[in-house]
Length: 512
Ligand SMILES: Nc1ncnc2c1ncn2[C@@H]1O[C@H](COP(=O)(O)OP(=O)(O)OP(=O)(O)O)[C@@H](O)[C@H]1O
Ligand SMILES: [Mg+2]
Image (cartoon, rainbow, N blue to C red):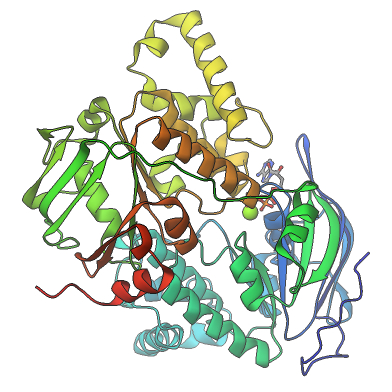
């Protein structure tokens, strides 16, 4: 049963709910994803869905968005019972969703993607130039730095996320569903999105918002419904204390998300000298990462922070400067050779380049290690060693459910992220580069990942942490490089690392 929390101050108090879900049940083979869940959404509120990875959040919104049919239960929209036949049907009622996994067509442009599938709405009758204008207008309103004519395949994950968000805003809205929309966005884009949410709230739109970030719940949430293992736990207001939310979510108390880390910086593992990339994303960057320390790399979306690491790892061509790894020059070496030398890059985009979605967890984890003796001695023995190690790693990262033979595609978003991290642990690594390691990960798992990074650091590995999550940068690193438009804006260490200093340098380059 929903509790009767009042959202005082809303001009829509007393209006009937936009949506009312009663006793919704959804089964997957072997998994009861939702077990008689109740949920309601009022006009003009942001209703947060909160719960661990695999709790059933995405399943609920897929049902609301018409992408998934429930096995049992009823749904009311503006007081009338409905059966949503498709995403298209939901959208015709003004219910629009931004899903965790994107649905963009890479070969099409931003504007083509924006209006894809909108044929039946008024947009469909617009001619090309009107389409272009409308796309430009939506992007401008959202403040997203995208060109309507850019092809989506050339965009970063964050930019693709912006296109997904923009898609939801193309038509008239009653219900807006956002599944971790800020996962790859930085501070500025997030603020822009929040401003927009405030705008549509004022027009009476109801927003269902999924996030694992406490600060976002505080910032924009009105009510929070907590799910655990597919069951409804409680609905509370956004004033509810953080530890209480975590307790409702996990059934236990987690006292500390960020661990204490002892840094013992040793010799330099990675040295970058005046690095410039061929594609112009990085110009003249110099930095280093030593053993026994965690170095942060911060900056806005598109500032080139990922590209620095990708160039060092041989994923994008270098046109100037050099990189040294473990004292030897490695400029331009391919990823395979960097891996063999002990450089491991964990990419942010698990679908695009991190994981083979149709393969099992075991196969995915074992993949980077295939050339190593432990795994390649052949036949039955090898398979056995592989399974045992994979199971141990999966357990350590708290994979839910703990079934390593299951296809990665069948796991929830946060659990896919765990598989991606586990991949790095099957070989001897001297430098770990984590690019957005906790995107889409719940609080409990987040704490587990941080402990894991701490252990790596304290055992002498060098760690480069690339992150848009500011608390993560502030709490885990002993040195931070801030980038701005492809160049280094600042190097901060110890006491100098603060929210203000990092943010300030995100917007201004160092004077030449
Ligand atoms: N296509 C699928 N086939 C089988 N099981 C699935 C499928 N999609 C989801 N599940 C299972 O349903 C349950 C709920 O998953 P869901 O994706 O709704 O979780 P979530 O709360 O969104 O998690 P996260 O925070 O990780 O995104 C999980 O146990 C998951 O493994
Ligand atoms: Mg999900």
